[in-house]
Image (cartoon, rainbow, N blue to C red):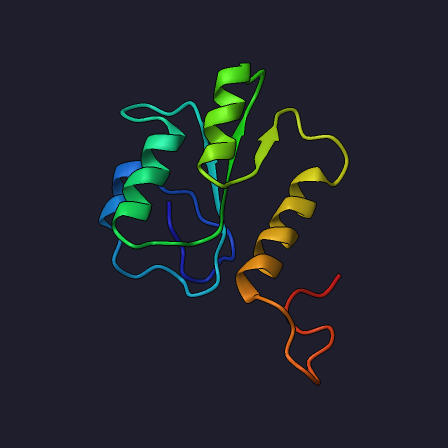
Length: 113
């Protein structure tokens, strides 16, 4: 279910692929194990469409090969169960990276902690 009024939205992979109105500031939390396609397939299809929203793949007990594939896709792997603030830390990092380096006079711009 998607809500424009909420900072959080859950959407099926095929719905995301058909979405034309993605928020300018967003971060995709992509579960690797999904019906129809896996998280890396979804990410590849989004990137093929020119969508470069920061993303991370979440899964539990990833194999060594899956870890390599996620790293090759250039996104972080966040393992379930989430311990401590690991998920929040990865989301903050994604937004910081998407914002680029702070410009002069904008110290602290972007994400507040």
